Image 1 (cartoon, rainbow, N blue to C red):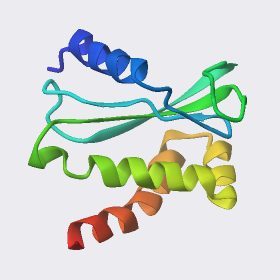
Image 2 (image 1 turned 45 degrees about the horizontal axis):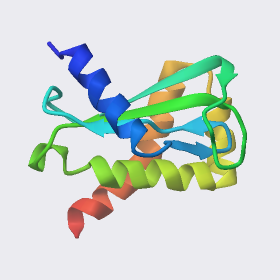
Image 3 (image 1 turned 45 degrees about the vertical axis):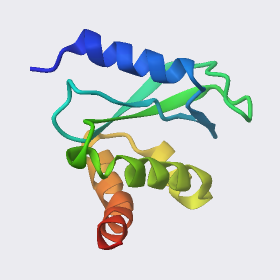
Image 4 (image 1 turned 90 degrees about the horizontal axis):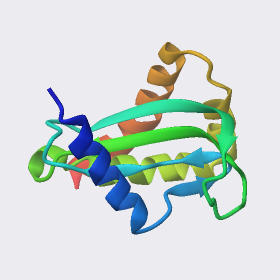
Length: 124
């Protein structure tokens, strides 16, 4: 079982070092923590959107939360974060992401977007 309090503390600590809103209505809070066993990404819609201090001033309506352990087990953390930011900057991908309405759609979309980045990172 994950120590939710410790994970929240890691996320708050990371956020205090720099805002993780990427613009376009997207926030990507993330942290590494010893309390998680594997890299994971979760999605949440915020209604109403939250003023997150995004660089473009757009309130955040969609959050992609990424967490990973330290060490080899969390090796995919940075490639995943990089690919999420890249998809946020790519207008067609971003529009598709923002239009997703079900968990199944989100899972399929995320796997389709992240898989090439992860495969590339593993082949380096």
